Length: 168
Image (cartoon, helix red, strand yellow):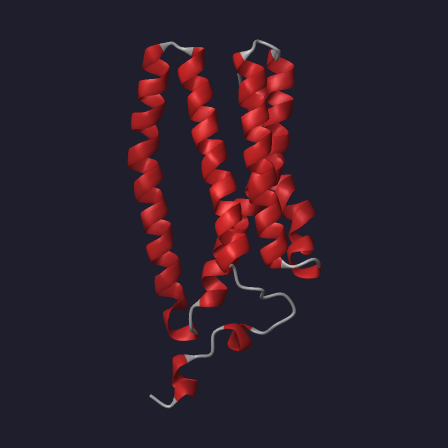
């Protein structure tokens, strides 16, 4: 089992390291949209291949490593977005609130969902779980494309001016 976890960890580390500079050169909005959408599509395809019995342990590991590579860059970008779109005085609190909410939803919802899926013993239920996660990723990509902020090559003050500059 441990030998299969190492590639996932490498994908998680290498994704942001190798793709991170593209968020500044190509653009955050474009890269966030692309990485979330690509991760969602890859997850759906992997789920389908798994459901149809077309993956071995090695090809499943490879598929997940690729997904983790892309998805970890997407997830890392969430912190960038939150830190950029709020004024200086409330950035730290905004990051803390978003982190706490994400931890609450993931920490409570994920074990319940995963426990139920595993309890069914059904590959179809697992495939539906894959599709739900893939749909969430594609939805996130669509939301970024729709309401995301283009922040590349701009200072944080240009994106969200400090409240003190508003003369309040």
